Image (cartoon, rainbow over all chains, first blue to last red):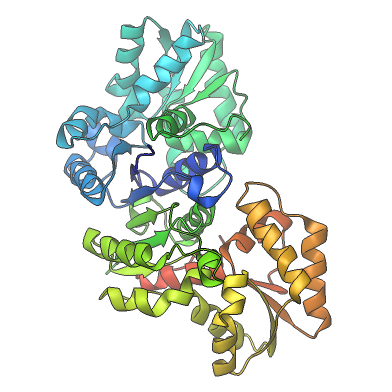
Length: 235
Length: 235
């Protein structure tokens, strides 16, 4: 039986657009009615996650996200997905606030990579995600090696995420390639695109799937299955 | 003061994805928090609108849409938009079911075209929209002449909407061009893309804005303004 999906989104809005598009495109369907019923919270004014985590802002996004999760459940959502890696720093509190399952993009992504036999990954994510060891902890638990960009590269990556993508522009390819190469040079076989804005970069720069794993795409597959539908592998 | 938007969607899902993308892209914003807060109902299993209107199916989509409009208002929506032309056959009942304003894609589109001084339009829409005279009535009231495709062309247009777009494929350009040319030959200065699937066709086939008015884009502009935000004219 198909389940109703709740998307806790707007973190940022364009990433949620992209996730919604991915779910729709990747669901095996031959007419409208074959698709998943969803309710999407696109709560754009949710305080910035990274700014709060690194102490740049005192505005706590957690209360907003917990409230949204509850509202989605009240609306009828039977499964919740959060298309924002950084927000998963608060995963436990969000899951504890509702009785329906909340999918975990970090665990789904590391499991998918581990299943492919990758032994060392490079982590591309926001300062908020990196500094809280969100991915690193799961990699350690799953026995997957990892590397992160150095400080200068991490700052450059934040400019791509905030200035380019959240600002509605194209990603700077030269800047992105330099950051990625640094991690490949350290022996990483695969880079995790661990920020939903980087999923948009993947699409803009046509990054190859055998070198980059898109966390948003992994979440989309897990979400379609959790809602009782099949993934269209040709999409 | 910015207003929270409710999108009554999923009619079909890919059109709602596209409308959400359009609103996000066209809102003047320099960071996530500048965007409109929204709640989106992507109710894919809503019975087919055209099938009900033309009597092919007894499954009435109205009860589902009225219920969704009320749920969106309960969630907090202060303005509601419906990215589906055919569903506007039921506009009055949906508006009557809630106390917040529901934008009307038909009236917004005809007004926008009239303001540009166009005297005769061609109507490209589903059989459901055409047979109920949804656009024709508003054109008559506004003093704008119109023409509709003949029966064979209307059937060909339905194949583009249902088989190509709702089926997840590219629109057949030869077929589309023949339908459009027939209307231009009858003296239509502009064609209304009066079905949200045809907005996707516009994007796929790069149809020129001076020959085709995309009802979904007109609705997106009206929606952004109704929510108290400005339209980014460069987007």
